[in-house]
Length: 326
Image (cartoon, rainbow, N blue to C red; front, side, top):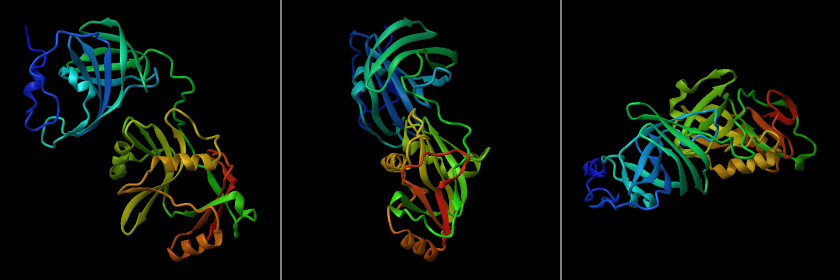
């Protein structure tokens, strides 16, 4: 009988990797365990593993499991993994096969509806994933994965195309100062960052400007499986480009356009979008004159006052946002 784990063992040295490398394959269990692992290797992807005849049959899914039945995702068939891998998390050393960080993204049980060499239909019941999926073979090691159920209740696709909300210009801050928060106005190019499946697309107006800003692509990997749409500005500071984000209009299947600014801001801060080439814009809840003075001292064009209760109005020049030159 062929060794189901022969290919797996041939790619791993137990003296150099913490991954489980068992000598024997169990005779089989319930064929009902699944795990999805987030794998920050050379390229971020998610590994879907289904228990079958004593091993975990595995696919690498670059964009993760699709939430929308209108979208199929590539799934690359990889070597069978041992059952012990269902609980594995850790750091695979660089230079080893699959070097990088492995974490469990979801796990649970599944029901098999169909299993052939070219098509696998399953019903997944995990903590994050629930529903019917089909994997179907296309060419070579390439398969596709498709969600057969409607999206989860309340799920919405990202808003696209999306026009930016703009402030009105005034010479003084609003009188009702307690109803507003205050940010710097940034001298840059307005851009929406669409992140899904660890990949980033950058749009400015109707233009896709991703190719010209490859330095920002790592932001997608930083957010992992989180699907978001950020509103912000590409600015040049100290000779280098930086993405400053100041609004969150979509978060993991939910549009935030109708939410008040204060809730959107809270959700943005929870994302902790701060890295070597991107940051969350600072905000102040009071003292507009002090913020205006600080903007002037730093050579920034001014401040923007944003009503705490204001929804996001795509494409509108709205009095809910007030730009005051420094």
